[in-house]
Length: 248
Image 1 (tube, helix red, strand yellow):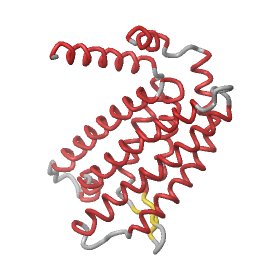
Image 2 (image 1 turned 90 degrees about the horizontal axis):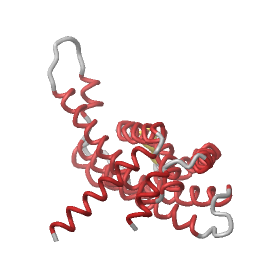
Image 3 (image 1 turned 120 degrees about the vertical axis):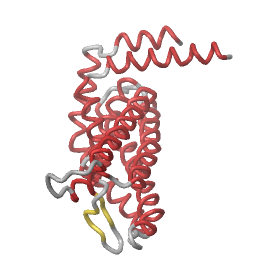
Image 4 (image 1 turned 90 degrees about the vertical axis):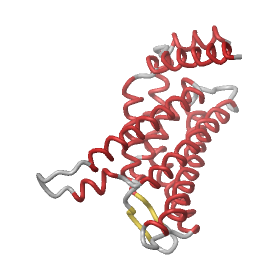
């Protein structure tokens, strides 16, 4: 049993290593940076009305989902989920470094604002991590399953558009809604002197955010489609696919 577990872990690590070498560095870098920025921007509420509320994460989250859609299209949902976990781990490490930097006292100047922003809030980090992981798995799985439905031309523009638009809208809605519930309904009333969002505000935030991010996805999807076509024509990830085929 132990031997089987070791062999499984060894295969998974080898596969993950090949995957990281296969995915172009620019895509992984943009994805990781977008996840880190999304976590920081979520600290600020941009708009709060009786029926809608938006946080700063909406400005960058579309990029995270576009990167996941590109990776899912070419490498599959498992690969995209693996890179998502990597991005989350890097984000957590970055937040730890930010926290340590904010906690170190300095008499050089007044760093109150710096410490407040980069010190972070633990329940915002918790909410964003849980919400992003859950929505990413759903987004990647939906993207893959919808793509399977296009049997005649799975690599065409229509197939790419449908799999990205539908999965992005649902994934973004769940990401926004889960995050809002955890942070602004669950923890904010306790730690922010009664400040909170209603469930309606959370739902409208999630819906409005999903629509806004879907619009961004529609605007930039031609770029994503061209990237996947380029990867396919250049046979990006050949070594990775050969390893997967051999192991299965």
